[in-house]
Image (cartoon, rainbow, N blue to C red):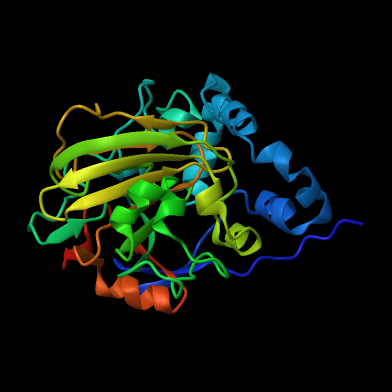
Length: 309
């Protein structure tokens, strides 16, 4: 008989409300099955490969998937009035999206999110739940309990990883209910970019407790950025289960501006990891404090996420 344990509640600190809150998890039954049941663990490779995720993600492009949009918005209390409407004529914005993916990659309306402009303040590059460390070392075990994160492993390149040894680290986890476009944190240019092949495990904190090497085993897109105010950055988009595709919308050979869109994830929750050079900057104090407590900090896109060292 297959048993599935109930995961602990995922608590996070919401900077906007100033309160600890409980996350509503989309597809929690599937995560429980996949990572805690005997059957799920035996069948895991069937679901955590790129082919399953791409096929599942592709289904979200079908017109029939639009039927899921309204129930999703209402179940997770998404403030749809903050977002641009879809391309289908409709009286209600909830019915204006031609597919679930069109809804999933929705943009904010102009003026709904603003990026901090002070040169010494880094804006949040994603609307997400953040953890952060002022230096990567073996003490930084959260959220990957029992396995500390090294720059060379996250980047997938030992030589490039040396640039970021002992530097600051931010991990931004995007849930399926979140805005799924990610942005540049400063003005600058792309020095290098490459793909690191890998699996498509969930990045849910519950899954991380059972597989502690997800961030260094999952598929990743790595960009090395030279920024105006924060030195060199390693900007890493991490694929996850049911992420149909990681799309880069900014041209690599074109300089970027603070707040400019870099790309987006098609269906599924995922993660952006940011690494910096030693001493160049550090995560905002509330992120550091909450990380020490073992909880994430939820931030709006563009609000302060770090300060210059």
